[in-house]
Length: 559
Image: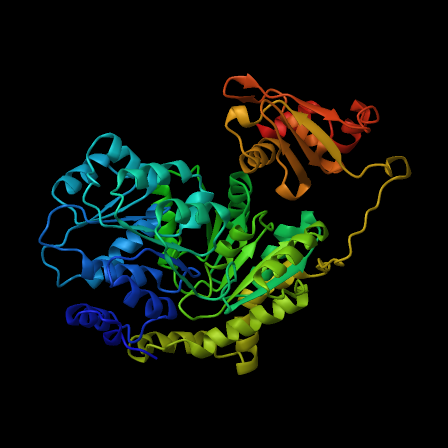
């Protein structure tokens, strides 16, 4: 294995790396650093999160930037505030011996005035999120005419988050002869277009096959009824006492609901989604990084750029629609060479998504079973015993309190003390899991209908919104699920048109969604849903009420 010295880095950078505890480069660092130190090169680096990409581009940047010039020479663009701050911290730690180097971070959710002041003082390196950088460019605060190096970190995430137009505008603002270094976990078509339009014969480095997940991740799934997903999550968490994980949901509504249920049930959890203020988001992330929070429940977008070490598990409450989303989700665990588990809690109808992801990753998923109540109780008891055995005893400070303890317990035998001590924790789980039913379901899809309903397989619904309303398939799906109060697994094919669209939905949810959309407006226009297709005439108000209750009851629930 090579050393950092052999990669061509200067002595003071190597010493800074040593002081931070790094002894040898990761594979992406070993390949990228010598190439980037040449200076006049474009590069596409494909590697999963947690593989050391920041140092792979950050160390060469520090070597190539001239700290004696006040002009901005390097621009790093990242999708989220968290990732921007992380990159800044890493570069500042690497460059402690650079006395005149000024690295400035700009991102939304913080005072733009403070950031303007810092930029005007002179910044050789700017690290930015696309939205805030666009704001500063429009105010003519940032001057990119002297930029020699542009780094696009987590490029696929930025494009998934809708920053394509911002990235195009930013790149056209920079000099034509700049070098572009693009780092991404996956290489979808949109990322390939960025490379084609703004890079000149880039060198390409790939760590593993494209779209291939981290080899240290154990991909697992459990199959349960849709209504039992939360119970399965609870049972899995109870059976894994040392879990430190991220739970992914598709919508903000689901994220908040699951977090609230977990907190109510006594778990150390919180939510992270787009409706949180920056202050709330900072508080949640600080708690999670400090491990005072055990479970973080998040949407895909809100979790972009999370870089927290030692995450043991990633749990998917639904399988995402895009392969890249699954790759990014599962990439939160098994970082820096450690192992981790990615667990999908799926219903039978989601088995096809598991098979698709298996083909994309070229990795086999392992089916695991939801533990029984007895198994959970046994594991909780053994975990408690292990904790007692491993606890560090402060002999000096506890000695003065022990005589009273011994006196209080004098009539109990050793066996009685052990039983009573264990029961303090054990009784609660024993009571909860007594006669707990089996949540596991067969992988085979079965459909059971009443005789009169056997024609029901799925409904096709017209909705009077589309591309002209600024919607894409993903945002329309979110709209249907948020207002309709259903999960995305209930929604099938979406046919997006200009002024209207069609979507398929499971029969069991049609009435609920159509009722919940009554009175909903989008940008001042009333949203209208109509049932279409051959089943329209058979879908009666009477059947709606039989399946879903009255309109007033549904509205009361939403309030």
